Image (tube, rainbow, N blue to C red; front, side, top):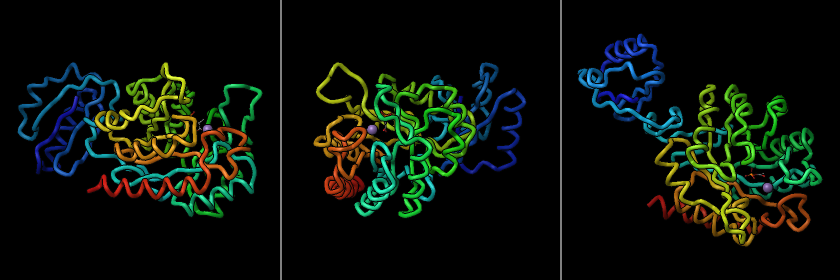
Length: 334
Ligand code: PEP
Ligand code: MN
């Protein structure tokens, strides 16, 4: 249930109301908007007399909400959330251009890619150290060494880094990682999500291969319920009957999620289509439909990449994409 307060309510009146609600065993989430304060009532609201609440002098309106996601719900928190990734803001007009290889392969590789994507306009470096591969015989990533190499690339370029975690036991290795990625395959690994909820790190939560937007938000809710509200959602293509592309990019996830939640939403065009030649088109579509950022795989030598070479852009291709994305953003801001 949410209660929207009238404008200009005095602090003492607001506090009285909150103590009364808390006295009924409810938790009250306060969201101070530009014009209105919204109180989100969490818990068993069946005991709340809606008419009584709505009749109070300081209350403008009361609404029951049925969605099971509360903290991620835009109704509770109407303003867009801005997530700060070590100084790089994402959301509410701040755009993330995340780029880098699917996996970290060597010190030379990750430093070169970091320098090149930064020069081309990226503001965050990606790189997988722990890789979720479909086959156990495929390259599984450099693991802890991969994280060390990402930190070196960060020291050289100043770019914040994002890398995927697959096991909560690895959390100590991610101490200096700026943003932790939860991959599509782990979107519903609830024990992992709960552990991430106890940290204060920004979390890049990717949509599962066959998950609804509501399920994505429930996974975000797991992290937020633990106290970590720094969640960024990522649409990365879903599984459909179509096989021409690796997955099917659900572009409508962006406007849909924007209605449902206040969290930033970014798009991964690389995993969505699986073909480097298609990545630019999807990146432009994502930008035009209001995504708060992109995460794009870029490799120094895509043909010889240890993972996902077919969908990785060269430096030149990536630079063209960043320029056009900037142009599209200008048009969209008009
Ligand atoms: C990745 O980002 O390299 C990755 C494995 O992504 P996803 O979880 O979306 O497949
Ligand atoms: Mn990949």
